Length: 130
Image (cartoon, rainbow, N blue to C red; front, side, top):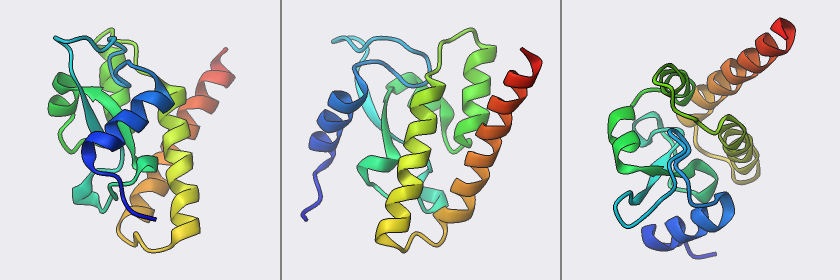
Protein backbone atom coordinates (compact mmCIF):
# COMPACT_ATOMS: atom_id res chain seq x y z
CA UNK A 1 0.00 0.00 0.00
CA UNK A 2 1.50 3.39 -0.98
CA UNK A 3 2.29 5.89 1.77
CA UNK A 4 0.32 9.12 1.93
CA UNK A 5 2.22 12.37 1.58
CA UNK A 6 2.32 14.74 4.56
CA UNK A 7 -0.67 16.87 3.48
CA UNK A 8 -2.82 13.79 2.91
CA UNK A 9 -1.73 12.33 6.27
CA UNK A 10 -2.72 15.60 7.98
CA UNK A 11 -6.14 15.48 6.30
CA UNK A 12 -6.61 11.86 7.44
CA UNK A 13 -5.52 12.75 10.99
CA UNK A 14 -7.96 15.68 11.18
CA UNK A 15 -10.76 13.45 9.92
CA UNK A 16 -9.86 10.75 12.46
CA UNK A 17 -9.27 12.96 15.52
CA UNK A 18 -11.11 16.20 14.89
CA UNK A 19 -9.85 19.72 14.33
CA UNK A 20 -8.24 20.49 17.70
CA UNK A 21 -4.67 20.47 18.98
CA UNK A 22 -3.93 17.36 21.02
CA UNK A 23 -1.80 19.36 23.47
CA UNK A 24 -3.60 22.65 24.15
CA UNK A 25 -7.09 21.84 22.90
CA UNK A 26 -7.36 24.90 20.68
CA UNK A 27 -9.62 24.55 17.63
CA UNK A 28 -7.79 24.96 14.32
CA UNK A 29 -8.64 28.12 12.38
CA UNK A 30 -6.98 30.04 9.55
CA UNK A 31 -4.81 31.67 12.26
CA UNK A 32 -4.18 28.49 14.28
CA UNK A 33 -2.91 26.07 11.67
CA UNK A 34 -2.57 22.32 12.25
CA UNK A 35 0.70 20.45 11.82
CA UNK A 36 1.51 16.77 11.93
CA UNK A 37 3.05 15.85 15.26
CA UNK A 38 4.96 12.60 15.74
CA UNK A 39 3.98 11.15 19.13
CA UNK A 40 7.16 9.04 19.17
CA UNK A 41 9.65 11.57 17.77
CA UNK A 42 11.55 10.74 14.60
CA UNK A 43 14.84 11.10 16.51
CA UNK A 44 13.66 8.26 18.79
CA UNK A 45 12.85 6.06 15.79
CA UNK A 46 9.20 7.02 15.43
CA UNK A 47 7.83 6.28 11.97
CA UNK A 48 5.84 8.66 9.77
CA UNK A 49 2.77 6.45 9.97
CA UNK A 50 -0.76 7.62 10.68
CA UNK A 51 -0.64 5.58 13.89
CA UNK A 52 2.25 7.75 15.14
CA UNK A 53 0.88 11.12 14.12
CA UNK A 54 -1.63 13.51 15.62
CA UNK A 55 -2.59 17.09 14.84
CA UNK A 56 -1.00 19.85 16.89
CA UNK A 57 -0.86 23.59 16.53
CA UNK A 58 2.48 25.03 15.45
CA UNK A 59 3.10 26.53 18.89
CA UNK A 60 2.72 23.20 20.70
CA UNK A 61 4.60 21.23 18.06
CA UNK A 62 7.49 23.67 18.22
CA UNK A 63 7.58 24.00 22.01
CA UNK A 64 7.40 20.26 22.60
CA UNK A 65 10.54 19.66 20.59
CA UNK A 66 11.84 16.19 21.43
CA UNK A 67 10.26 15.94 24.88
CA UNK A 68 8.48 12.69 25.47
CA UNK A 69 4.70 12.81 25.02
CA UNK A 70 3.72 12.11 28.64
CA UNK A 71 6.16 14.73 29.95
CA UNK A 72 4.72 17.26 27.48
CA UNK A 73 1.16 16.26 28.41
CA UNK A 74 1.97 17.05 32.05
CA UNK A 75 3.59 20.36 31.08
CA UNK A 76 0.48 21.31 29.10
CA UNK A 77 -1.68 20.59 32.16
CA UNK A 78 0.64 22.74 34.33
CA UNK A 79 0.13 25.57 31.85
CA UNK A 80 -3.65 25.27 32.28
CA UNK A 81 -4.25 23.90 28.78
CA UNK A 82 -6.65 21.08 27.96
CA UNK A 83 -4.54 18.26 26.47
CA UNK A 84 -6.41 15.27 25.07
CA UNK A 85 -5.01 12.38 27.13
CA UNK A 86 -7.47 9.78 25.72
CA UNK A 87 -6.35 10.68 22.18
CA UNK A 88 -2.72 10.29 23.23
CA UNK A 89 -3.48 6.89 24.78
CA UNK A 90 -5.33 5.77 21.61
CA UNK A 91 -2.44 6.89 19.42
CA UNK A 92 0.21 5.14 21.50
CA UNK A 93 -1.88 1.95 21.60
CA UNK A 94 -2.53 2.10 17.84
CA UNK A 95 1.19 2.55 17.20
CA UNK A 96 1.98 -0.42 19.42
CA UNK A 97 -0.47 -2.55 17.39
CA UNK A 98 0.90 -1.26 14.06
CA UNK A 99 4.46 -2.13 15.06
CA UNK A 100 3.31 -5.61 16.11
CA UNK A 101 1.62 -6.02 12.70
CA UNK A 102 4.36 -4.57 10.50
CA UNK A 103 7.46 -5.35 12.56
CA UNK A 104 10.61 -3.29 12.54
CA UNK A 105 10.88 -0.02 14.47
CA UNK A 106 13.55 -1.46 16.77
CA UNK A 107 14.51 1.97 18.13
CA UNK A 108 10.92 3.10 18.72
CA UNK A 109 9.73 0.04 20.66
CA UNK A 110 11.44 0.64 24.05
CA UNK A 111 10.54 4.34 23.93
CA UNK A 112 6.92 3.51 23.11
CA UNK A 113 6.73 0.85 25.84
CA UNK A 114 8.07 3.32 28.42
CA UNK A 115 5.51 5.97 27.40
CA UNK A 116 2.62 3.49 27.59
CA UNK A 117 3.74 2.39 31.08
CA UNK A 118 4.05 5.99 32.25
CA UNK A 119 0.63 6.91 30.85
CA UNK A 120 -0.98 3.87 32.49
CA UNK A 121 0.64 4.74 35.84
CA UNK A 122 -0.78 8.27 35.55
CA UNK A 123 -4.25 6.88 34.86
CA UNK A 124 -4.13 4.32 37.67
CA UNK A 125 -2.76 6.93 40.09
CA UNK A 126 -5.73 9.19 39.40
CA UNK A 127 -8.16 6.28 39.86
CA UNK A 128 -6.67 5.45 43.26
CA UNK A 129 -6.71 9.11 44.33
CA UNK A 130 -10.38 9.56 43.36
